Length: 378
Image (tube, rainbow, N blue to C red):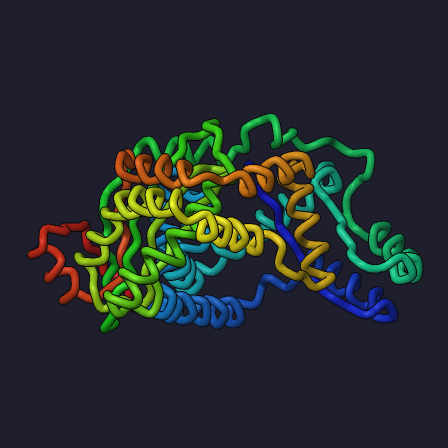
């Protein structure tokens, strides 16, 4: 687990120097002592998050579910999920009632980031452009690097690829203390529901075949589309699966149902097993599913997207060999892989639910046997 503060921008080669100057100002010279500006920004953040939960509740449901199973998910939820909304409210109250203490926190964070002895150890500059552009802006790059704070020969940060990050240690402790693998409902003013259910489908360290990408896509574009969107009337029904950490989730978007949608999720394993029987008889349909999965991997990218994708892969220590192996497994997908994945879904260990909806919808769901711990969010 690693934590990176990232500053990004785009510019033409003749404006690269100005872009780097802005980066330097943001990093080293941001004015943190304006109480009125901080309060204004926190109020805007609070309003934006509350609106986002009502409009994109499926994303918050997914983040909440993942926080119960993975360290990255737990930290991500605290920094961008429903928990973060409460953090913003607390920060706003502190800004209004105890500004000096909050300002001291801001300064402490910046001082930690710009620690003269260590900050150069964690700095990475990634630039995307053709050879002519890179040659043209090299003086600007050199100037930018020379102006950055820190000693290039200073102390080294710990190796987070091999040593546990302090945030990960704290997250593990909090997750063990809370043991919050429970079904939760979050009440907002809405006439629709955002229904999520998921968990750890593969355990950490367990091998995940590239065939899983084919199966998950088939489930998303077939069974869930038909049952949740076409028949159920939701604006969207889909699933997410990460081969990196084994987390799998079902999600619906602007869904008129709640309890019925959870029932659809619970029958997905049987649907995949039935699909495996059909795909054994229809190799063309299997080939179509494989082509779709490969297409998701090979979408066209703009130059900046190509650069950022390469940077992200480098940060994750993701090798070309590993990607090729995953691709080969996708191309070798068999109907039996659908059956195996379906059986795994049927024996899903300890999945949980997170739903963003209205009080009335949760009351109706409870009568249908879908009880949850309810929290008022907005």
